[in-house]
Length: 278
Image (cartoon, rainbow, N blue to C red; front, side, top):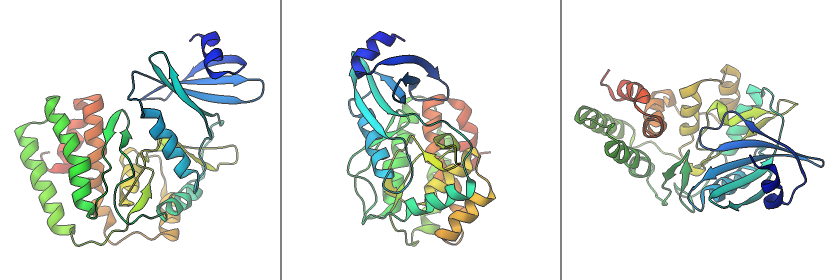
């Protein structure tokens, strides 16, 4: 990393730069200056609006929960960058995290979707407004990822048949459920949440849109890291609908498909388990 080059680009008196671990999508660096410390996120040859979407998501979440402040966004040669506040990471209060996610989900819209498309990881995420939740989720979440899986050779005829049947059964059972569009983090796994020195939860790396709040809960269960006080606090402040746990696998399918398309067949087996092949 050329410190002098980035010092000129960012117009900051940089004392030190070092790589941070944990970024699946971007290269991430700690930037120290005399006045303040920052996080610099880099993405080579990313779509022009890649970090614009992250900035937009952070600034929207900031109205309800704590997020790092956004300072700069730009491009250095072929590298897109986002400069945000550095916050030392500690464990977070599970109870407070559940409460804050509930408050986030209390921010509602009239329809499902968002004002523009954005990204989940590196993959495009469609957000055309829709009045019907299941139509939105199937056509703008599942089907684009299934199409990509076919193009990458991850989608067999057996998976196609089983998944079609799984979706049909879900729609037949739950299509009458009334759902209010909630503001979602959109990628709510434990790697996108940490605590400050007071254990206050800090939300990062959002993929925001308005949808069924059960999505964020389903993703929290997919990769673990959240304990009973988190779910108890959430349910106290914003009680979940009856039988929400039965719908979790359906909503986990979207993220598993994204992981299949991003990281390969290691995510094929959990998909097969959900759709009923294994």
